[in-house]
Image 1 (cartoon, rainbow, N blue to C red):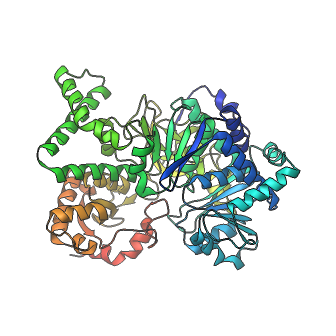
Image 2: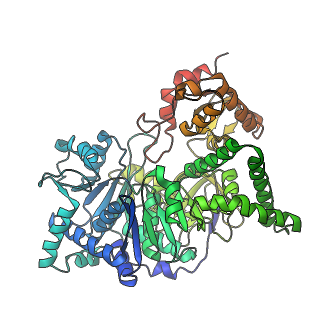
Image 3: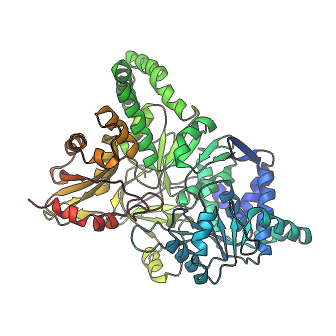
Length: 609
């Protein structure tokens, strides 16, 4: 086995607060008048300080105590990302209870399963739609005593508003002013803070038990890297039900920067232009879509503008390559680069507000070509890696030394090693306590003291980790060749600006095939340029013209692959994959088995003569 640890100053980690409630109120005390959050309210953005946030958290936490919530009891949040989500989460942990996260897109049967399995006592629900999911299964939830709604109808009994809960808190605080402080003081580092149910790419979701010490560690570990300061401004849109969103909250508490919050995915690019953040976390699909949109806009412009755009990136990529290799940039090339920076790259940066120091990419593999394209435009994307089972953050690249194709070195305070079969194993404070009510699966994941990630990877001489595939996603052709499908899939999505999903199949078959879906927005623009304006999505993607266009990109992909990896046949599906069809998880990961089952006949047909 190979092993690597990163030696750094661990004092900030060793001296971190004992729990998230203490971490939050320490931040309120240190930065009372600094901006903590800003969020949209109608057409305006409203800002609140740490002191104002602290006052509201105290009232909401006291309100939960008034409802009879006891330490480590579970409280659910079923809502999209918004300021109230964060307010509820901080209040739950400050009351000594534990947050159970529920994606707003989760179907009601799965909502009922999560609430029942976690024995939730209270649910914070975003609106009437989320309340209806809970109400439909009320008889199956004997532990649930109250629903607190952010926006929606109340009945004054089972369903109350957030303002009602705050009033209950005020009444209790009038009698016991230190009730919340007592709960914070009594919360142990190893107490349950969060129960996050995994996306469930296979079977029922599992509840991952994460301690207070895991979240305080995550924030302190990133603080120890020195890559962020309290003068930074984060734009946060990621689903807070996902561990990636939660780790960014912990980082904010540790460092103290302000965060602009708006979970509407369709508003991301617009909001970054308005908010002008210095950093943002996102899944790779966001960067892929932004890249594709910008490239397609230039194609539509055509002529001289497109030629300048293409030449700019040719020069930018060459300059970056020389810098990475430690070689000097020739004078003429540097002059060209400076010109193209003014003409092209500065405009791309301005689309994201013009102040971004770096983006952080996680949740799935980032295609190297997309990362290099953004870097050439002067926007650095730091790829990181982690699992729900490791409180999200385990590895991240550094701005001063960003290695494309890797997820960076392990965070300070954690360890990594590669097992004999190539599996990545992790040990450290961020690793989960275990799976809720699943002792056998906990033992399987943590039996030898190391978390078995299920990912295949390798470490370079500097301790930077490269993930090569999912252990269970690797398949072998009938010719005995191993295939890593995610690597091929990622390449195609970087090559083809119209691609939404690309799934490679070939287990126990003599060649590989692919199922392809096209992005509705991108393909509509293509159709308008190819005499099909106004046609339906299905008519466009099943047309001979669209198939020929896709075939060209598949040929380009095949030219980059080993012979046994090449895609011999493909099918463009009549619709995109969706959460509603059960083919995507709420965090937009593909449920490969579900897709294979739904399209079994079509896949089999690709192997017939």
